Image (cartoon, rainbow, N blue to C red):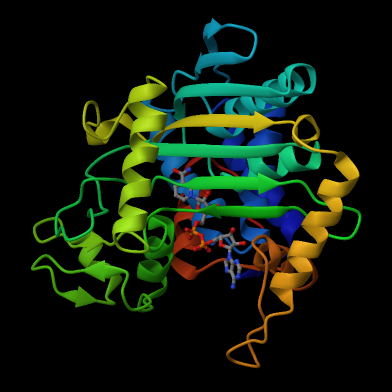
Length: 350
Ligand code: NAD
């Protein structure tokens, strides 16, 4: 199924609205999901609506939920999203941090118990567009943890993503580093499983701890496999500190303390937003960023067909291609969305 992005967004909006969300929430969530598809991250695109509908039907996702401000010292605030839509409340939290960093130079927000905040890069992009540096550390608390620590064959983490965003210059787009600390995001395993495709090598172990590229090992209830952390002990360590920064330190639900499978998808996030002009002269900093990016791009590629890229490039390339040619939604995901649409008597695009 290849579908034009605006048509997909309108369909996604109708599915979100079925949960009773107000129009502003519907628009933010549908836009976030389709933007994830456009940027090549189908794992965090409209396919997530299957889980969102499951969760609003179960009451573990609360449409139209406003955050509770737990504390606010001026530059540090803690919000509790109380299982409201992460896409809406995480955006508000980052907007607060940007406004605060404009005044004070830096802002820290701890976001507790948001329902899935989606593609974390969305928040880095908002901050970078505002001229800010942003660091986001996220934990995920929902159901059995699929990601093994380095040397383990049992899951102890979820995919705990990290995002670091650096503002663009007049010559360059922002640098956007945004990835799961697992070798692949779980949604990518779901997409491969749905599409009947193998996973890349080095991402999965089966129940016995043997390497496999078969995504179905993650869906075998009795003999579940694990996803590996990226970069061996380095990704595993980053997953652990994400869990502690966004869980224990922010005060959000953690994979260890509170994760009955029926709680839905819960994210905690520690966001640090910095106005870089408080650290260095703006013009010389921008010139240095441009020089650094040019230096990195100038490295001769090991494979002439695979040029050296800067973080954020793959998403920009995917977006241009998918805006022009449409978004491919795999058959299983499409079938699941159509099934939900028929239950809620929602029109399905042809
Ligand atoms: P990924 O492995 O595709 O890595 C993406 C990052 O690597 C981006 O910064 C991208 O620009 C950069 N990159 C990719 N190829 C590159 C290249 N050749 N050269 C230079 N840079 C390159 O991403 P992922 O780990 O699959 O994560 C996908 C998405 O899932 C992210 O947006 C993440 O925020 C999201 N996620 C969210 C949650 C959640 O609970 N909310 C959990 C896990 C992941």
